[in-house]
Image (tube, rainbow, N blue to C red; front, side, top):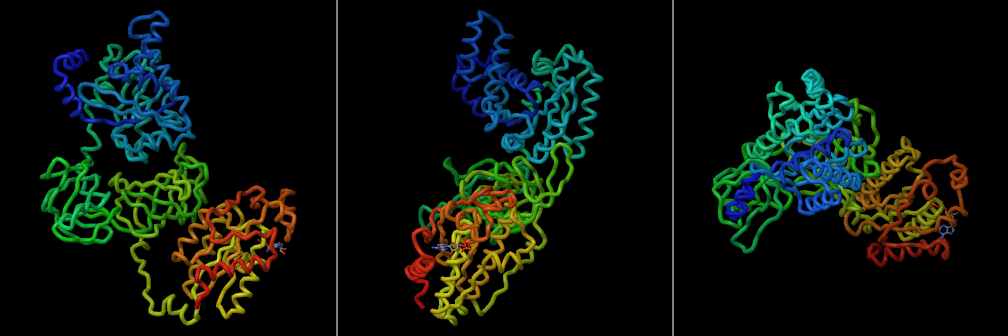
Length: 635
Ligand code: ADP
C-alpha cells in the first residue's frame, strides 16, 4: 500500500484519477458471528488500510489506552468494534462497509445471520456481484449455510466464495477442506449455484486472505482479496444483455425536444438502433443519446442517459424502451417468488403497490401456491406469508407492465411490494413468467354501458359503504336509507352479511385472510352493481383501511361514499344485538373485531355518523343529505 501513499504525496491529481476510475465490486458476507464474519471483514478493512477516519481514530485511541503497539492488537480491537456495532443495529440494518485497494473499490454488505433476518440478507444481497459464504472448518456445512446459499441463488447472485474459515484450528488439513467443499458443491448444484470458488482461510491469522498461506501449500487457488480484486463484475454481464431502459421521466424542455431519460438496466444502445416502447408496443429508431457531457456514440448498462427518437411515439414515465428485435414481455398476471418482509402477514386479495423498474402499479396476490422452508427447501402449503417467509404465488396487476424473467434480467424481473397506507416496503419479488391466461384477457366491449343503464333509471349509480364495529348500527341505518331511496323512486340494492355470507361467501370464515377476501368479493359485486346502474349500500364491518381503499379504487371518483358508523366499542358492546360480544369475551369467538382483532377507523370518510346522540332515522337522514350535497340525487 506504501506506493499509494507516495502517490497521494507526490501527485494527488493522478491518485484521485486512478481512484475514481477503479471499478466497484459489491459483495455480501453470510455466516453467523461465530463463523468469523467480523474477523473476515475486519481483516479486509484492516489490510486495505482504507478505514474510515473515525474507525481509525477509535482504534488508535484504544491501543494508546491499553498501552499496546503493533498491528495485531489494533486488528483485534477493530474486529470487536465491528461486531459490537452490528449487534446494536442487528434487527434493522444491513451494515455497508467501504474499502479500497490499488485495483478496486469495494462495498461489503454485512448482514446478521439468523433466520429471522432473511429480509436483511435479501436487502444486502440485492445489488451484490459476489456472495462470500462463511463456513467454520470445525463445523462444516450447516443448515444456515444452506439457507444463506438458497437466498443467494434466489436473489440472483451467481458467484459464490465458499470461505472455509478457521483452518488453523483444523491443522490446515486438506482432507477437511475437500470434504466440506465436496459436500457443499453437491448441495449447491440442487439450487442452481455452479460458479463456486472454495478457499481455505484463517481470517484471524490472515491465511490466504491477502497472501498465499505457507501453512497450506496444497491450495493453489486465489486468495480472498486476489479473487475479489479480479472477479468479473455483474455489470459486465448486464452490459452484454439485451437493451432495456426503464423510463424515469420524459424530458420536454420545449416543443422541439422530447427525450426519454433513465438508467440503462441492461445491454447497450447506439443511434440508429431500432427500439420498441413497452407496454404499448410502438416502434421507432434511436436518434441521439444525450448526456450532460454531450452526445454519445454508444451507451451501456449503468449509464444515465436521455434518448431521442426519430418518431413522435407516445412514451411515458414507467414505460420500458427495449431492443426491438428482443423486446421484454408484457403481461398483467405472473407467477413470482415473494420474500415477505413485514410484521403484518401478506394476505391474498389485499391490494399492495408493486414497483417494477420505474413503474408502480396496484397488485394483489391471487393465489399463494406454496411456501418454501428455507432450511430444508421443502414446499409447504400456504394461505399467507409471514415475516421472513418465502413463497411462490400468482400475482395480478391492475394493468399490463413490461418485464423479463428474473433469471434473465435482475433489473427488469425484480420488484418490491409496498403497503398502500404506510408506504413501507413489505416484500420483494422475482418474476418467473406470465400466466397464460394473462395473454388472453380482452375486455368485451359493450354498447349498453353504465351511463345508458343509469340514464334509464334516472339516477347516478354509487356505493354507500358503511363501516363500523359490530352493533354500531350499520344494518339498521342501511335499511332506513334504502327505504328512503326506494320511496324516492331510486333503484338500489343492499349488500349485507346475511345475503353474502350465506351464499357467495359461505366458504369464508373470520380469519384475517378470509375477512380480506370477504370484503374483496363484496367490493367486486358492488362494482358490478354500480355498472348495472344501481345505488349500492353495503353494511360490513370491513375493519381494514387497505380493503376499503381497494373497494374505492374499483369504482370511479365520486362514486364511492365511505360512511363511518362511528359507535364507541363500549356502546356497541352494551347493545350487543346478536350476543356476539358476550361470546367473544367468553373466548368462544375468535378474531372478533374490537376484542381480539383490530378495527382501523376511516381517516377521511365522506360522512361520519354518531349513533350515540342521534336516532337511527336521524342518521339515515344524514346519509341522504350527504348524497344530495354531493349531487348524487339530482336526477
Ligand atoms: P351492525 O349492523 O353495525 O352490526 P345493527 O344495525 O345490527 O349493527 O345493530 C345496531 C343496534 O343499535 C340496533 O339494535 C339499533 O336499534 C341500535 N341503535 C341505537 N341507536 C342507533 C342509531 N342511531 N343508529 C343505528 N342503530 C342504533
